[in-house]
Length: 368
Image (cartoon, rainbow, N blue to C red; front, side, top):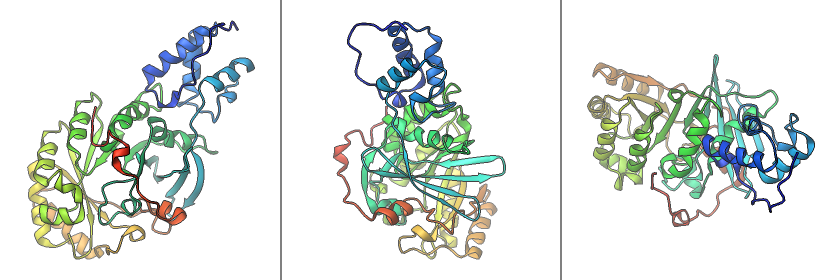
């Protein structure tokens, strides 16, 4: 191994780089060390496809080269703080980040499929009335490596958990952290990295319009789910303060303009949004947008004072939608015996922290 006598560049957060940029960086690093180009591909493969906890564990490299890689590319690790398993097989993970923040990831098995519900922010600024994450307020955006790193961290377990599907439905609003979510999507999808098909990756948003436009401009066929939760502006405003900035009509227009079928997510709140008049209004909106409707039973653990709609009410609501020509599914409740509601485990373990002003992250709401 030939070492360039020039001063080495500063350490690089290699897990934050999308595949092309990471491989270019690693190729330049290999050349500086007098190594052939295939070393870059080898090293990149150990970041995502066959991940290692530390680059010192890349045993196909000579010891001195492993040491150089570990020094030049320190890996951001997600420390597993808590792991809970439900009787239905659902698992929830609480990860501690390098600065003491915590995020949640949920693994939901279903036959051969394993769906990971991942976080894009620590906390959330949106304060939806029924969401436990909103209670903690916004703490900070996650980096690309922290977002895709949740999938990586579960691959590092023994035995590994290998995701087939990804939903951005954990903590945070992904389209308010687009600068990190965009490269994270590349890491999740690229066959050289995590290799999960774009149609198996869903972005869930309350309706951040610039982010929906940016997602639509991607060439990959990523899925879009929009949290509606109320079929009128008046009720949606009560439940979701973001409706002031992005009212329902504008969100519906964005859904109609999206070049792929959109899913409407609708959490069923007992006596609040589950009445026949609301089913009729939601059906009109869904037909207008050619949307699929996913009815979500409220998880009682993170209900924030709301009560779940009784099963007969939920069933009648679904039938009212279907009778009006709207394809509808009722999501099966998972993890009812653990703190599986979004934000619930973090809040239970850490209590509430003072939120951080969103101005500290000036690119909130900015796509591209």
